[in-house]
Amino acid sequence: MPVPAAALTTKPLPTQSTAKRPVRLDSPYAPAEKSPLPAGRPREWYVTHNRRLKAMRLAIALLDSGVYLPAQARDETIRSTAERLGIHPPSATTCHMVRAFMRYSR
Image (cartoon, rainbow, N blue to C red; front, side, top):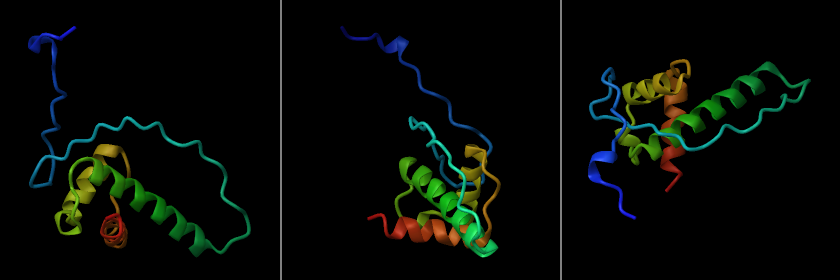
């Protein structure tokens, strides 16, 4: 049974963004259940591990929103995506890692 066009609505895009084009984030995925990290590793291992997880979440969100090329993912775009996801703004190193993940996702 067809749905009338008047019943179909789209979610409005957020208006505050530093990105030059709108990035739409509708995540149908439920977050994975977290488990504690292994104890006894050097601090640098935990920092790198968490940085990789954050970069991967941002890369997936950007790819889902239509940003497919690393050149399209400028620092401002990545940081505005992080803001929409409720993640702390990533550092320049994390932004570089996001672009690296996107480069190897093809």
